[in-house]
Image (cartoon, rainbow, N blue to C red; front, top):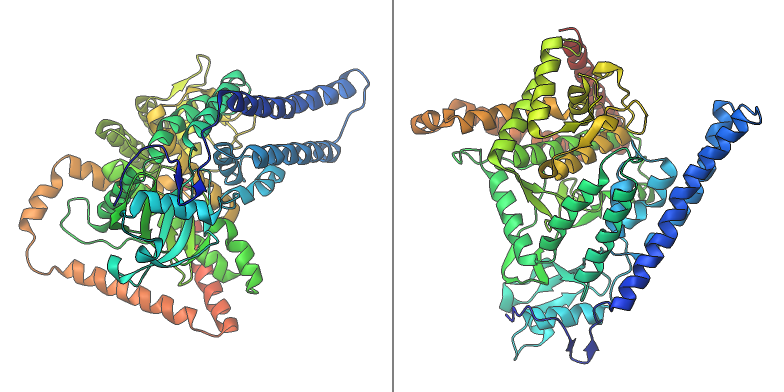
Length: 552
């Protein structure tokens, strides 16, 4: 295949779009600032208006009146922001994806208005998509039909960097085989890098007013973005993460991966085109809509059962990737998580990945263990240990922060089951008394760890399921520390033949798979009752675990 990385020009009469000129870049930046600043200013103005009414005019507003005023303000702000992102697209869509996934942080007007940006961008014409594929993959004497016997004109999804089409490979290329073809938008790189420069400047300007240091967040995303333009790196990352999850940490045993990771097709990988396994399903961002179309209640026991399955799968995969190898998927959002037709969960788009150092990973494992093993939420010795480990990670606090601030930040981020944070801090991130307000800086190396943690935190909030990442990641963290200390070496040498625990584990997996299959085949009313019973058992166990921990 032609793996040339020259800038695309034209193919078979199709004209490729040219990179943005300097004038276009300046115009784009002016449009961004012309829309972003009025949104921010309107909030300062509304706050000042309320204070004037209360202090100077004596018009005291009750909670309901204030809520109406701010709801109207959020509605107007969300509409303006959505319109701006629709006009500019590019990297601003990534920002919309982050906001849409944080129902626990941003007003519902914003999360609902921006939820459509996860996977529904305007696609490039199919002729242009085919031209990119032809230029990148076909040999000189080949036609498009020599490689693909089917190629859907309507893409499966269209994002800021690329779009994906379903296709079927020809016999010449190992078919007939159903695949997904990821195609990069021509001339997109300078456009997105200019966008993120604008976002960095806005975050830097508002650094003191925002609940988090988003300048550091955007700086880390900028670093990761440069790798996202190279699909060869993405294919390597996809295989590396899959291989890390497919076996135990010491490589001695095969392990079950609770979600589906597509595999790249060898020989059909280049910088701007990636051919991989096709996952049949819908993104999580559209799952609720699809359920309603099929007459399924999104709040039914079956849905709650799936919600727990989703949380557990994401927690396991990200926990093992982060704590065991330090190499993980760094762009999790509802558009990249798929609900497959057979009920399984899929994870796509490995363009953004992150590698964290062994030392940082070891300290992070110790933080998880300290959180998971603490004796309740008020043990002074445990809280001090957690705080010290958080500081060892590289968290920097304000000079006047309370002694409990570092511990409170760790508990807020990685333990969603805690009722009261130490130091009297509030759990709400936007509260003036949030421990996040005490952060001077967060280690850039861990920004994307925080992003995956916040995705799971946001999902648990949306599903109303108390979820402690620390407790779920505790056993993985212990395993990782034991492996680093060489405790697995002796066990590996002694392994021989079939062990009883392997037989038990395999039997449990087989029984669980059979039970799940049996439940899905039950008639609808009976299936609902069975699912409701399972949910009640799971909720009872979760409440019992919380009570036990708080009474320690």
